[in-house]
Length: 308
Image (cartoon, rainbow, N blue to C red):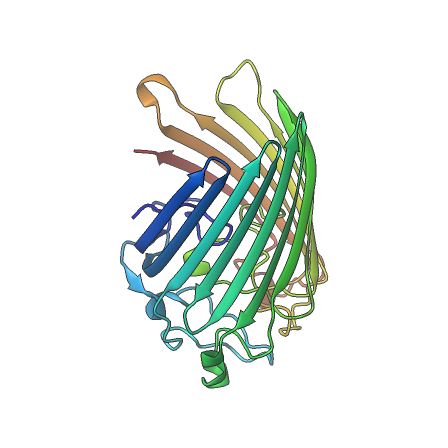
């Protein structure tokens, strides 16, 4: 089954293989401006893997992070989840579009996502809001086995504004995760798509933080199908030892991404080339257990994809 990307359930950037999903998908478009999607997904093959997993096996394959009290979480293969149900509705007319998404993660939690986007002439802007609440089955599990704790209500608002022309695009985005709980969603299903999201930086796992992202893209007219981009992201308010709002124990950080994207034509049509350079640095903490494999690094990625 080919699943359409959503703000949370998506292919993400490929590492040999993107996320793949198994289940049933219903698509209905009663009019040009209205679209409705409903789905039940019961198996997933996360990126960089070649095996299929049911949801109880898949959730927690990556880092399980920490409980709000600072103890390690151990929910992999203990959630009992059978899958995820999705309901997506979108409405678009002229320069305005509205999206509603609901994700019911069986035996774990429910997430509602609203998004409004406006585009006219060379200007664009958007607003996103999401709210989460845990399901009753989580309360019945021992605390280390819970994916989300009772009373945790992840809540995020994100806005952006910018302008684009034939040869460039610039935008400024801001996200705020409220202190009502950590924003959570299994990384084995995709990456969050709030307006401040950039490669190698996620809002997932945070609460009570602010994120600012400045993004610029250039499309040189002399070289067709070439895109040069630069992103600057700054996370404010994260405290590495405050696990109530910090699932992975991260510090405040700033990050710079520069990228080159090229779409080949002719004989090599459908081949894409991406060159990504990432500079990521903590603001406060530099101890090895906080920065190892997460921050204070320079990283160069050369990625090639062939789309069949």
